[in-house]
Amino acid sequence: MIPRYSRPEMVAIWSPETKFRIWFEIEAHATTQLANLGVVPKEAAETIWDKGSKATFDVARIDEIEATTKHDVIAFLTHLSEIVGPEARFVHQGMTSSDVLDTTLAVQLARASDILLADIDTLLAALKRRAKEHKYSITIGRSHGIHAEPTTFGIKLAQAYAEFARARERLVNARREIATCAISGAIGTFANIDPSVEAYVADKLGLVPETVSTQVIPRDRHAMFFATLGVIASSAERLATEIRHLQRTEVLEAEEFFSPGQKGSSAMPHKRNPVLSENVTGLSRLVRGMVTPALEDVALWHERDISHSSVERMIGPDATVTLDFALARLTGLIDKLLVYPDAMKRNLDLLGGLHNSQRVLLALTQAGMSREAAYAAVQRNAMKVWEMRGDRAGKFASLLKADPEVSQNLSPAEIDAMFDDFYHLKHVDAIFERVFGPDL
Image (cartoon, rainbow, N blue to C red):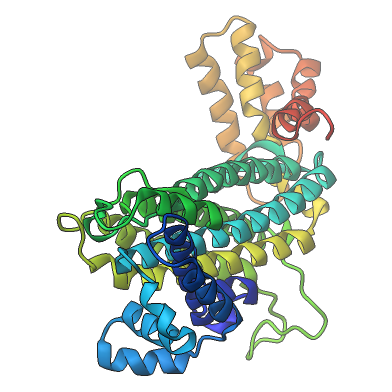
C-alpha cells in the first residue's frame, strides 16, 4: 500500500490499531462466553471488557514486546495484561493464536468486501446513467480492432454494467464464504474450549462458525475470495482498455475528462493522454498478481503451518486497497467521460458502408444465390472499396449496382435500402431491457 493509490476508509481496516481492537474483541467475547459457562469468573470477564474497551492499545509497546517474544499474539496478550491486570490470566483460555488471527482476517475481509460492494454500486450507477444517455449514439463495432457492424455507445456501457453486476454477485458470494470464525483451539478439536464459545464470538462479530477448522480456517475460502477480486480487476481493465482505444488520436470517439490546468506531457504541450484508464490497467494487473499466491496457500502441511501468513499479511491489505482505489478511479472516469457522437459517425462512414456487407450477403441468398456465390460477389466489391484511398462515400453501393451478378438478383432500390445504418439498432430496447429491466 502506498498513499498515492490508497483511500483512507479501506486503509483503516488494515491499520495496526484496527487489528488490535479486533483481537481484543475476539478475546473479550470468548472470555464472556467462558464466564457464561462457568469456566472463568464473570467479574473477571467484566473487568476485561471494561478496561480493554476504554484502552488505546500502544502499537509501539506491542512491537517492543514482540522484539523479545518473536510472537505477535503473545506480545499483544502481554500488553493487554498490562492494561487489565490480574484478571488477564483468564484471557485466551483454551485458544490458539490462529483462532485470533484467522477470525480477525475474516472480519477485515468482510469489512473490505462491504467497501468494495459500495464501490461497485457507485460504478454501476455511473454506467447506467451514461448508458441511458448514449443509448442510441451509433458507433462502429470492431472485431479484431477492425470495423465490423454498427452498435451504440450505450450498448458498450450496458455490457460493462452487466459485467459489473455479475462481479457484484460474485463478491457477495465471496464475502459470505470468507466470513467464518474459528475458535476451536489447538488442531481445531475444541479439546480445551467449548464449541459454544466459537458460536458466541461468531454471532457477535457477524460471522458464522467454520465447519471444520484444522487449527486454521481452510484456505480454499481465501483463494476463492482473492480470485474473485482478480476477476473484478480484469473487468475493470477491460473497460479501461476500451476507453484507451477509443481515445487514440485516429479514433477519438471518447476521451477522459481533461481538467483546467492539467498537463499531458512535460515535453509536448498538446498532449491529452488516457492516464486514468492506463492507471486502472496497471492497478488491475497488481490485483491479479495476488491471486496465484492465494491459490498456493491452500496446500498447508497437515493441520496447519504458517507459510500462508506472510502472503496474507501482504495481499489482504494490498489487494483490497488497490482494487478499492481502481474502482473509484474507474467510476470517476466513466462519470466525467467525454463522448463524441460526431466522431463516431465519421468513423462509421470511413469505409463507405462496408459495414452493411452482411445485409447484402443475406439478401442475395434470400434472392436465390448460393451462400458461396453471394459471399464471393459481395467480397469482390467490398475489397475494391477497401483498397481505395480518399473518398469512399457511396462507392460500395455503386459497385454492387454495377455488378451483373448482384444486379441480377437485387434492384438498385433494394441495394440502397440496405445502407440504412439504423437498421442495426432495432433491438437496442430489447438489449437494454435485458440489462436494466423495463424502466430504462
